[in-house]
Image (cartoon, rainbow, N blue to C red; front, side, top):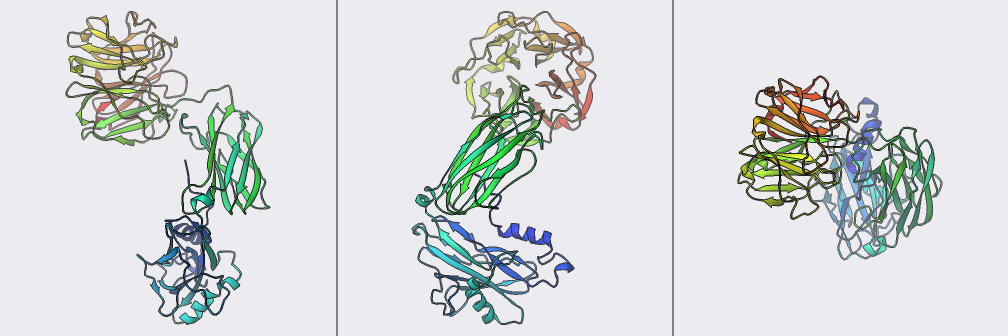
Length: 566
């Protein structure tokens, strides 16, 4: 995905932050009281149809007038013969306190104060602006009670002044058309990273104009998002380009960037892996920012792998629907003490559903489908996107009508071993039916087959995943007296469950039972249960069929805000 370069010249807001941190901006305290105010401008490139403010920040305490000037010629001509912007560029002071200075073309004055130090004109490139249309912008300042004319002349001659270490008072604005931007190219070579070792990635750059190269690293879309500093793969060096042009971050993943003059370059960066990294699939994204404000900057991505025998630990999520119909999701943390992160908003409009179930474990990287039944009896299929972004499900598909004959609809995981998620449904007479999943997007389930009768003795049915470690999907059932029963999966669709085994009593205190997956990263499937007071409890899986769960631990309160969980 395109991203704004982190090493761009400072925007106004960033410049304020930086100046405050350095104690050089109004409001930074007594240490800056003696600092003279000075507005800065910045070199920038615009695509046709784009605009930008000209300010590049400021230093010192503002109480007077900032002056900004535009010329068609470099700011070294005392006669101001080139005053004003060239054809294709125009200035705007809309939304500012700035005014055009009467009698002198290309001059704008902006009252500035401690609270408003960065007012400035903006410049826009017309859609018809020619490639390499160039304007020169200068800045100066007249403190309250001093000569404005002197400040204007200083801005007009700003090209003769040396830039300070904090900023520059003369800059160049250049139009770059999409055809011009397309002349620059960037290519990536990203070999895999061995454990406890280093590898070198290569970026080949052809910059037809000065450009900023930004390389970032992140998990592939089909991986879950990583925790902070979880992936011990660091950029440890960057080489190539002119001296001092490139640098890199430190810490987990990170990246590298370079400010490059026009030319051809081979940039390399070194990745070093720690000894305990999981087998992450990672993506390097290289963007060559030729135009600061525009489109079509060259960009390329390349995928590579950490060569580890340890798979990436999965994380699972659960969903809760509030009475208004808004659905939130809770992503797992991988720890038993706090197994879920705070809620994130997913979607609204779910108030018309009276049942919903995950067909298989829903992961943080977008795998795991779900179905929901509306009040009219129509069943809808939500297919996972397979990415770690928040568009968790694709637009729903209609499964069919008539599903209100069922008193329970339960995602059962894969009961037959064919790699597809199945559904079980109990009708009003107590018969349990199996709907085998298919790979079709229009006929998501095969014709139902009967599992057995007498299932109306159960208050709740829960697809439990593999509780025993035998690779087969199991089922939990709570009867009306509160006894919890385990039905071990057989892997045979004709008889998907073995005879029931008693797990324990007293389970009728719970209004919801969910088995989202391994929440504690120990390789065993866990259970969460909500009691009538809204307290959420975690039962960690043991992998033992006779005692499949350890003693419960409290993991939260207030969960009765949800009238549907899956």
